[in-house]
Image 1 (cartoon, rainbow over the protein chains, first blue to last red):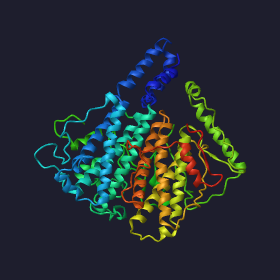
Image 2: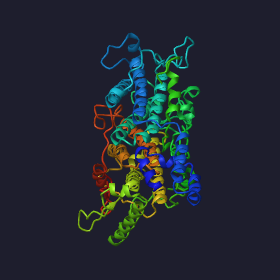
Image 3: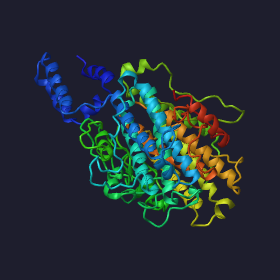
Length: 331
Length: 260
């Protein structure tokens, strides 16, 4: 029998088979000795045991539909955030929304409306792509963007829909989380090239949104030429660059948003080559760039800024639950 | 495959925007090296993979004009890495040259534009050097050469010209990475390369957004780069190369025909 042909066949339905086996490389050493001591008929049994072991120890990696539905949940979350604060596209704004909108400059308000419309379009696109597999929109009031989780104790973002700076802070956390989430999901979409491409094409739009929100945050909600304001001082929590610099001091509200920029624990099913370091990571592909490229004499922080990092589904879920009411199992 | 264990060395050359044009003879030496690398890659495949891919090993495309040669990025994951490396070389060379023009030198050191252009220069040079190290480690004989840019259409003393070109390069980069994800393998280091491309493309998208904002406040996205579904419009290597080649000198223009 040809064990490697078997592995090749398995690979057709499970691209990660090599990683599963590779993490238990010692098994191959063990097996190479088997041939000498086991009768030929016993080898398939021994090989079967190896595969059982390789698969039994891993929870299931998400399917393409799992990843798309998780993305859809995040897009529902984002779309609801902008709709509630700014008013839905084409709808008449409530008095509260009208008053809130007056707290942004014309160019900033147009930018936010554009982002809201993009998130709604992403919801529609993912629902169409998933067809009957699409998760339905959650019941109204599933999300609580004040961070109070639906309770009576005021949350950390109690003024999210009345104070523009708080709104932009939550927006930055949501958009940066979205960027990390799509990046973490991409490897599980690789079996369907068209779906992968579509997800990548959403991923970069989320990054553009995040960049704009950050630009607005450092300039202030009423600034009508936000991009002309440089990041001030060294506090990237209050005055972010348009990209993530180190861990941005834990993000706009460190007590709540630090996990958005921190490392994530890899689920058991994660391929060995995939890791989820914090945003201040400077080691890429096994090379510490800060050390290897020291001769460039660049600012140290540039080496982390040049690369965004991914997060796995469970960590993104935990972050998203900051904005889900207690008792809901939507995310 | 092993992880990258060493950097590309100290000879970064980022302060030398112009390289000696490659000689015809040395090009063929280079082409031979690529064929060798391709054979090496194929030897690692099982029978099914070889027969599933009817394309022959990449061969240099004939020159487009007498005396000129194309830089073949190759095929497979190394080809994708070379493709990304070529675009990062172009971007890094661009921002390096930006720093010599009077538009940049005339900016107040504390201005947003100066800070943004400084960061973009750092990031793109780091991307270039990262790919140089990664490819050198993964396929030492398969790496493309240092490319010579041709920025003769850009006026580095003029804000609109510089930012317009920056917008073009950043948007092009995003669409290129998005379009190349599907070309990366799903086994071995493929998932790592896909993740690395993702780590870079979102930074490029952040760049693109703020450069577009500098040119026109609030234009961080637009119908020129997004579909009606609000998906970014990705581009194939062939389309990207056609644009990139207008900024590359003869002898440095790209042949991406192996990327399919």
